[in-house]
Amino acid sequence: MKRIPLIIFAFACVLCFYDGYSYPPDQKISTQNYIEIYRKDAITDMMQTGVPASITLAQGILESQSGNSRLAKEAKNHFGIKCHSDWRGERIYKDDDRKNECFRKYPNVLASYKDHSRFLRERSRYAFLFEYKTTDYKAWAKGLKKAGYATNPKYADHLIRIIEQHNLDQYDKGGKRVPLHIKPNYNYANEEAAPAQITRDEPSLDESFQYNENDVPFVRAMKGDTYFAIASRYDMMMWQVLKYNEASKNDILKIGEIIYLKPKRGKPSTATHLVKDGETMRDIAQHYGVKSRKIYKKNKLEPGTSLVVGMKLKLR
Figure 1: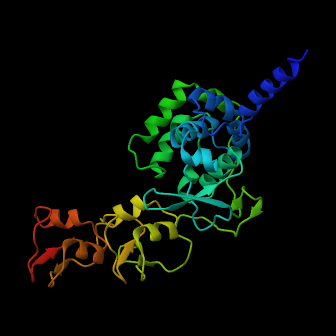
Figure 2: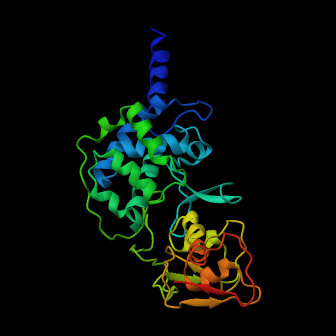
Figure 3: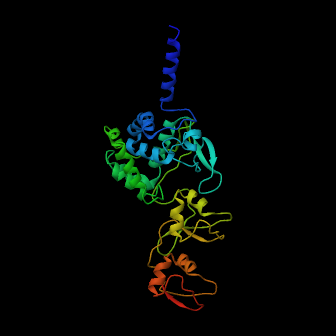
């Protein structure tokens, strides 16, 4: 009879391990255990937000290393979501694209799942995903990649492989589309509403952007600006800002430099340009909102060809 309390205690410990919210910090969790622990949270979130449970689980597995990453263990952050300007909850810092970056910290994993879905629902570039059926995990996976959720060209393939390998699509049954509505940002960590932020197709954090002659929106760099800061300010991925501006993450911005927020177009109203002293092809491309490679091609020049003062370049 004396052994009964020990058995009960041991059973209680097992339940604690599988409660869906915590596990021993030094215990490495397997992918299958991860699914068993968090599938109910993923299904609960799907019914409220319309994000397929299979997608949430697959992203959690991939982004958190099946719950074994430092962010997952110490911050219950299973999707690597950074603080951004609208975050009002607790924080944790670690090196990522930059040194000592800020990441969101949650009270439990379900809060991380909810915030992940909120992140998708409140950013306009992901809006088209919610037109897909919750059972169409392939469309969701490819859509996430298309919208720029990750820079890895194989990101969609990785998600699909994880879903099919572990039969995660079985948890999508019963899910349904949940219409998008403009709502205030919501902080699931402390259950307090954050300031409202409306998302739309154009950048909306302020109205400081202008349009060039090709109708491409741009801003001018301010003192201390970086590409990362501009990407965060306009709810963009850093790779988008770099790609649209033919730039490298190590480039230093000059005050007043033009930074495009959408892809540059190829037909400016100006037909030609005379090269000035010190100008580079990128300078000219940025000025007219045209891609450098198109100017090279239009003038039958090899990329990287040195420019000569007074050279007449065709722009269209």
